[in-house]
Length: 104
Image (cartoon, rainbow, N blue to C red; front, side, top):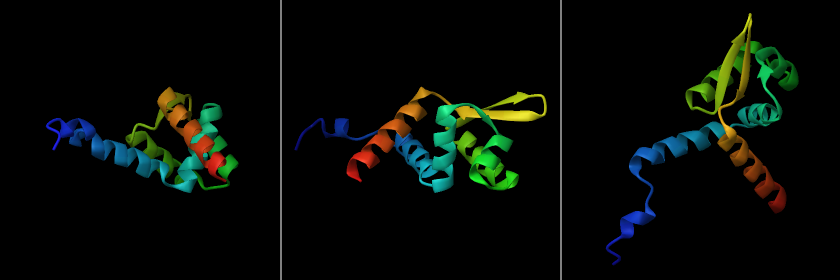
């Protein structure tokens, strides 16, 4: 057996974070929100209109994604604007969409 077998395993401290990130992406509504946010920063009302959902439902999804570090929020007056947390989220989305389109 290879004495360095542990180099093939992701450290436990990262495993749960990676799983939580993919779990966040594992919901169709959140995928739609993430895709829209990959195009531009949007306020909650824009997302509500775009997805034809209630404000509370959209806010719930955004809170969950914010807690997982997928989106970030910025307040401007009475509005809260959301964007993707960083370019890595955009890259993951783009690669996933490319993979899915390649397989379909």
